[in-house]
Structures are given as structure tokens and as C-alpha cells.
Length: 397
Image 1 (tube, rainbow, N blue to C red):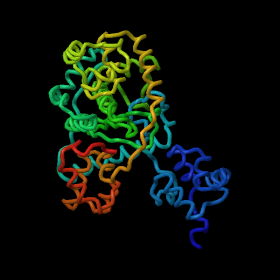
Image 2 (cartoon, helix red, strand yellow):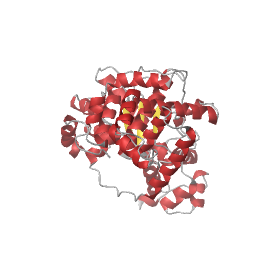
Image 3 (spheres, rainbow, N blue to C red):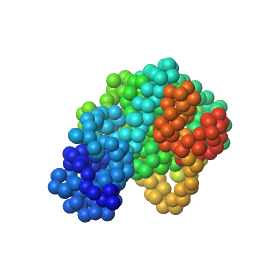
Image 4 (cartoon, rainbow, N blue to C red):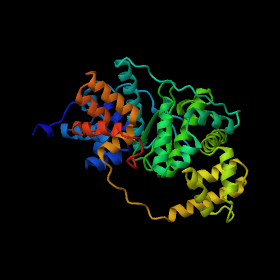
């Protein structure tokens, strides 16, 4: 059969495709059900793969088949030239799952910029800035004002999903694309941001529970503000020591916690609720956090920032919380409808622009389906979902 015949593929292209995708030889060999030595032979030019094997590589690496027939590897910018430094992640050594997520989100952002030009619409600019010399509470007040979410609105949210949807919509109104990325372990990245002045990206891991999603999102927005104030650069150019970078992370954490829980509101909630009832145990923290629709850990971060307890108590409480969470039975993941997945991962602004470009005949239905990773048969229901109020349908992933 034609598919079992060897095809002339430049070995350098095969090596580039694997390394750019972040896969070790052994994992590729396991996926294609061949010995690791065979992958090495392909990449060294000792023997060519068959067409069927090249197709399998293209599918596994999430690359167009045409890439493998180029005479030399394409020149692509380093992923770490876009995203912010992430704790524990070495630039250029990201997991295959994180690398794929970064590629998809970067491509989605570029598509958004191009479609806005095609439609003759202005590209939103995110203009909020922050400086490390400022008190986190001052930056938080500025961010909260820009988000335009009142405490009355916040306290009226029925559940954490409504809170997440509302904070996401507020951030998107600032000119930030909010994406979710799947399949990346939470231990590697709970959130990340692409540091661009026009249409920057704040992204949240879809494995994250609803309560901490809002904190993670606002945390990433603070990093975007720091980049706007020339206090932060992409991971590829970040040279601060571990301790210095830990200070940046603490600033972002405290600012995010002050944004979600302003000082006056916290004081009133603590005194009015008679906290701490039991020495700030998990029950106390959960009860207080529930009022603001944030996670108990985010509330502990907030209380420490305002001096309700010191670092030693906070670290001890955090260890206890992590032990408590580890003992919880994991919830079984439910089936997410394709429309829910699209809106969750790509967000409403991006989805809306793709549909507008399709309606204006600027792109084809095939391109629209590819941009949204959604079959065209679902587009009618997708339009209906866009017209509904964000968060009215519960979870989004």
C-alpha cells in the first residue's frame, strides 16, 4: 500500500518537530508503537519513516502534515519569549502539554488581532500599570476600580461559577483575552499570562476548581500590570534570582487578594462574623471565604496580608490545608458539551469576533471551525450561547 512506502522527509525537520513539541524519544516511540531506536534512525537520516508514520507524528505533535515536507525546519520564536516566568518552570523545558497550550493560546491571540484588522475594528489596548514599589493595596484599589465590580454585586453571586464568570467578563472588558488551558498538571501551572501590550492574555488551568479560579485570574492580571510598568519581562529574558522572583510573586498574590477582598469589607466581615471563632481553623476560613466567593487559601493569603496572623502561622495553616485537600476524594470529571468547552477555553470576545468575521465573509466556515476547534454543526447553538448571560449555564469546562 502507498502508506507503507518510505517518504523523503528531511531528518532535521523530524528532530525539530519533536523537540519543539517537548517530547522525549521514548514517549514518541510508545505512541507510534515502534522502538526508540527507530525514532533515532529517522532523525539521523539513517532510514525514512513511512507516510502513515509521518501522519501519526503530525497528529501527535499537533502540526500540519505539510510542515514535514519542508526542506528545512521552520524558524519559530521561542515560547518563553511571550509568557511570564512561572515558578518551577524552566524556560525552554516546558512539558509537552504546556507547550501545546502556549502555542494554541498564542495562535488564538494572533488570529484575534488579524480578524480585528480584517473587520476594521480597533485592537483593544490594556493600559493598567503597576510598580513593585507601590503598596499592593494601592494597586488593588486601582485594579478593582477598573474592573467595576461592586461589593453588592460580589455578595449577590449565587455560587463560585457565577463569581468566576463575572470576574472573567470584567477582565475581558479591560482588553485582556481570558483563556483556559486543559491537560496541564496544576503542579506545573495554575495560571499564566502572555505579556503583550495589545490584547495580552491571562489564562487559567481548566483543572482548577471554581473557587480559586478568580484569584488565579486576578493574579495573572497583576502580572500584566507589572509588565505594563516595565517591572516584568517574558520568561526568556527574566534574570532575577529565585528570592527576588519570589518577591514578585508575593506582590502579585497580595495585590490579587486585596482586589478580591478590599480592606474595609474584610474588617466588617471579620468583626461582624465574630472571627476567628476557632483560631482561624479550616472551618473559619471556609466560612469567611464563602462570603467573598474565593478559596480558603486565598482568604488565608488575604488575612495574612492585613496582619491577622503572621507568616509562621500562615505557612503552618497552608500545610494543614494542603493535607486536608489531599485527603478529599477527587470529583469525577463530567462531560462538557463542545460549546461549553469552546466558550471556556477561547472566551466570548474571541468567539464573537470569529463569528463576526464569518458573517462578513472574511473567513470560511472551515477556518472558523478550526479557530474555535468546534464542528460547524454546533455554530447555531454557539450563537445562542453567546447571547445568554455569562455564567448563567454553570461551569464552563
